[in-house]
Length: 307
Image 1 (spheres, helix red, strand yellow):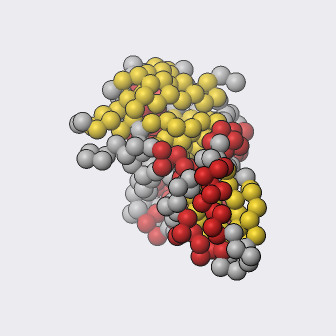
Image 2 (tube, rainbow, N blue to C red):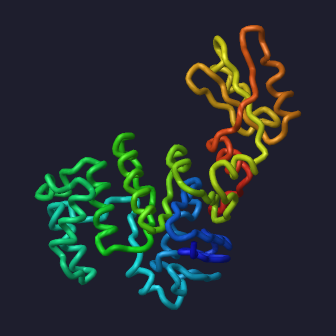
Image 3 (cartoon, one colour):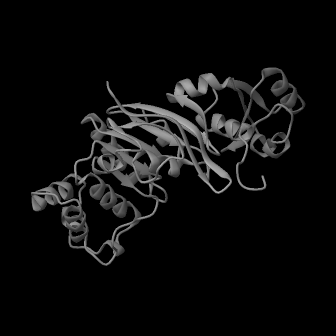
C-alpha cells in the first residue's frame, strides 16, 4: 500500500525547549497507527505538524502525497483533526454544528452529507439536541461526524475517548476500523492500553523522541522485558517493596495478584527471591504493553525546563 504519512526528522521548538526531536514516521494508507506516550511528550505537536496546522522547525516529508511545508493547505483540506477537547458550539444543535462545518468547507450536497453523517454515527434521533447537553460519548460521536463530513483521506484523533465509558469507546473504535476498511488512514493518540492493542501498529514517543515502533506484539518482543506474576494471600500488597528494587522497572497489583517486570532476568530474580514465601506461587509470564511503556518512560529524559 502507498504511504499516507511519510515524515522524517521532524523538529519543533518552543523557546529553548525541543518538544519534538527528530521524529520520523511512515504509515501506509488504510492503517490505524496508535500514538502513545506520557503527557507533554510531543504527541499533539506532532499530529499538528502532520496535518498542516504547525510548520516544523526542521525535517519534512509528505502527507497524502503533499509536501509537509509547502503544501499545508492541500493537506488540511484532505485531513480531519479531532482535538482533545470538544471544539464545536455548545449552543447549537447537532445538525446546526454539522451544517456550520459543511459551510466552512464549502461542501456541496450539504443536506445529504449531514443526513448521511447523522445516520452513520447514530445521531439522527438527537439531531435537534443542543451540543452542550450531550454526554461525553455523544459529544465524541458528534466530533467524529464533523471530522469526516468533508470525506477526508486521513483522520488525526487526539485522545478522542478520554473520559468516555467503555461501551462508547468500543463503539467508537468499531467505527474507526470501518473507516480504515474504506481506505482512510488513522493516526490516534491514546493512553488506554486496550485501545493501543486495537491499532494495526503503534508508535511510542517520550519527551519528544520516538522510542518504539511496530505492532503491539513486536514492541513487546523487542523490549526484552522479563515478567513474573505472584499469586497467593497478600501478593498484591508486596508491590511497594519491589518498585524501587534494583532490576525492577514495574511492580503493580492486579486484583489479588502481583505483576513484576524488569529488563534482565538475573537482577529481577534476585529482587523477588526474598519474597518467595511458602504462601506465594511465582510464575513467569509475557510482559504487557503497559509494562513496556513504563519501562520506556523510565529510560526517557524529561525535556521540561530545569529537568
